[in-house]
Length: 230
Image (cartoon, rainbow, N blue to C red; front, top):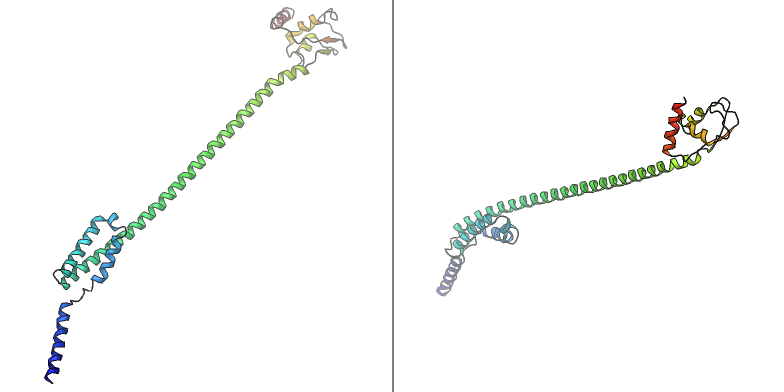
């Protein structure tokens, strides 16, 4: 009986000793440790180095109290404080990531707007160049036609004219298809001297040659002669 009591006391004492040797783990350590490790493996050291260093110092202080001084209550206070810092840091990281994402979206949108503006400016410039080229082409064509018209008109001008009743040489010379100038009638007169005895008297049905390739000096002389004999 005595031996059994002694054995029970030994077991009880052994349990007390083991309980004293194995101090309870602070409740905040299990919550804080994975959060600190997660922050350390992500953006915290780069984005917020000062805050992350403060968090590590608080956590390591708790670790020192827990492992060296075996002060689990004091350590738990630091673990709790470290957990609060970790949550705040985690929130700041989340806000920063949202802000950076929004800035990136804004930057991409601005680049898209700028690219569209540049595209529209290039399109407008190309359209202006095409319009300018069309205008130049039309101007060149108009000039070509303008240069060609006098020759065609000259070819179409009559080289003979049949006198109508009551017409005079100045009237014939003034006709648009002849010279469009009444003072050039002496040119017609000189070319048809064989038919015209008196420049002031013409006969209906007479057919006159209409010179076309007369010189500038001949035109000046004809006008001088016309003014003299008016």
